Structures are given as structure tokens and as C-alpha cells.
Amino acid sequence: MELYERGEKAYIKAYGRYDTILEKGEGVYVYDTKGQKYLDFYSGIGVNSLGHCYPKYIEKLDKQLHTLNHVSNYFYTPVGIEAAEMVVKATKLDSVFFCNSGAEATEGALKLARKYYYLKHGKADSEIISFNSSFHGRSTGSVKLTGNAHYQEAFGPLIEGVKYANLNDLDSVKALIDDKTAAIIVEPVQGEGGVNPCDKEFLQGLRKLCDDNDIVLILDEVQCGMGRTGTMMTYFQYDIMPDIVCLAKGLGCGVPVGAFVANEKVAKAMVPGDHGSTYGGNPFVCAAVKAVFEILEEDDILTHVQQISAYLVDKLDEVTNDFDCVEGHRGLGLMQGLVIKGSAKPVVKGLLDEGVIVVTAGENVVRMLPPLIIDEANVDEFIEKLKKVLNEMK
Image 1 (cartoon, rainbow, N blue to C red):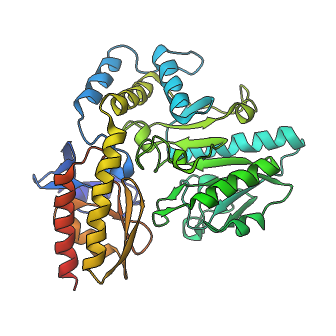
Image 2: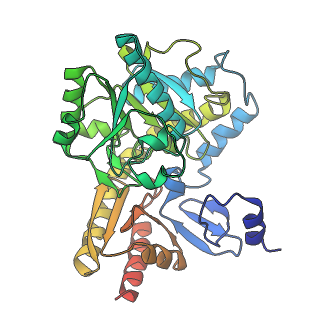
Image 3: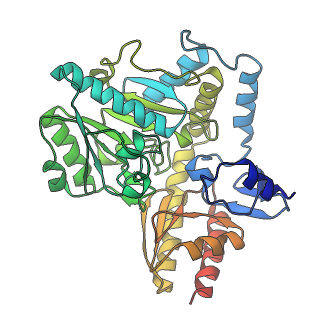
């Protein structure tokens, strides 16, 4: 039996998988079982920020495997404390809870915001404001926060008390706020929903609304955080601070780890027994978190992101100007979306056939989340193959 057929038999069919089977990676490239080389311009949904097999990263994780892999969270570990301090410093918040994924980070942030509300009002009837076209995960809590009925319709009844406003429409948010509103959750750049950045005035307006009404502002930076948009946290570009931020993906660069990080006012609402995670923040994943922060600083990755993303944007401008089938592009840093007139799926499939991995965001957007270490030659390779695919669509 061929490998693909074995996979189809063994796995629950939760994904529509390509028949390409990836076997190994190096730098910004991955290779399939037939030896075909692919430029990875998606980095495992924005996870592999350092590409594949980054030498410093491997060295640091290997060292941890020879010391301590896992202990329960009833004990601190040196590497865990160091990783937590790095996250707190990077976010400019006060304390962190480590979990295993972005969805879990969202769930934890939701619980923390509701606990804060409960302590303030003495009742558990809080409501949350999220946004249409958002994406916050697929657990039963985070999928309710996701403003897309398609992800929810088969899995009810879901949690109660979630309302949806429109991104970059502050009046639509104001219309939903009442005395039960505990939190507003928003992605500074919507990923799955189409690579839609928040306007600066809008995000600052949300912060003021939350301040005026003692509402918890949760920023979901699972996809856009950790340097992807050119600053360590995207909200630094908006000159605001959240009460809670959710992180994952690039936080561990391939090791499953998520986190929610909070300011002191909100964080102190959570006490022993309120939340937990067996694997969350174990020594191995914390070694990965620590390694990522060290490498981002040692190798000046954020400066590189700012420079190379400007080059990518210029090239996407060329594509927009040269092809009538392209409406434009949008995004921040190395989180970019190319808007196609019609379905983006043929472009994604065409690029895969040409040896480039990207995916869609919504129906008509080609989403690019390349490793943060790409260079101009990698961008040129991508643009050359993108133009070839678009030419063949004429």
C-alpha cells in the first residue's frame, strides 16, 4: 500500500490533504518522499519562523533533552522560569500561563477574563465581543469566538454569551457593549479571515472602550505575533497594550507550545485550581521558547523581517500592477495576502505544482507566512513562480 493510502486509512479525515508527503526540511525548503523540493512560503501555518533545522535551535533543544524533559507543574524548573521571564519581557506584560496550542491559549484567556468579571460582579453571566471573519481555534470555546458560522454549525450547543462586531467598525462594537460585557477579543491582523489588519484608530478605539468600561481587551497574536509583522508583538505598532495576549505558533517554532500573558490587574484573578495543563510549560517546550527568543535577538531577526518584508511588498506591488486577475495585497511584515479576483485555490494549487507552498485565507486570498529568515533570492523565486501561475490563468 502506498504511503498516501496508508495515511488515508489511518487518520480521521479532518483535513483535506494534498497527496504530497513531506519528509524532511532544511532552511526555507522542504522535500517530499520523491525528492521534490518546495519553497516553504507558509512555514506550517506561520510556525516555523526559523525555517527547518536551524542549527542553533536544534543544539539548544538537544541539550535540554539530555537534562529534563517533563515534570508536573507542581514544581518550577530553571528553564521554565527563564522562558516565562522572556515572554513577560517580550510582551511588556506581567505574568504568563503556558499551554500547548493557540486554541488553548484562547480558552485560558477566555476563562481569565470571565473570572475577572465574576470577581467584580459576583455572578457568572458574562458576555464576550468577538469579530466577524475572525479565527481563534477549533475547541468548543474558541470556535464560538471564531466569527464564522461554518466552523460552528455542526457542533452546538456551544458556549453562550458571544456577540460579533465588524472589524474596523468601532460603532458596531459600541452597539454591543452592555453591563455584561467581560472582554473584547480581536486579532490585530486577521489570518484565516483574509489577512485583514486592524486600523490603528480602530484598535486604539477598542482600548479606550475597554478602559472606559473596565472591559478586558484580549489580543490574539497566535499568528501575527513573535516578530512576524516586524515587531515582537504586533500591538507595539498600534501604541497600545492589551490586558491579555494569546501566543503560540512562532513561540516554539515547531514544538507545540502556547501561552496567554496578562497584566497584573487581570492576572491576579486566577488562583490555584482555576486552570491547568499537564504538558503546558514543561522543560522541553520551555527550552524551545527560550531558544527562540535567544535566536531572535542574537541573529537580529526582527531587523531582517523589516527589511525583507519591504522587499516582498514591493514585489507584490509589481504583481498587482501587472495582472488584472489580482485586486491587490494586504498585511503587515511577513504576513501577507494576495487578493485574487475569484477563487484563490487554483493559484495555490498551481504554486504547489511549481514547488511553492502557500494556502488560502478565505475564498479569494493567497496567504503568505514564510519563515522569517527568507532572503531576496527566496522572494524572487516565489514571485517568478507566482507570475508563471498567474500567466497560465489568463
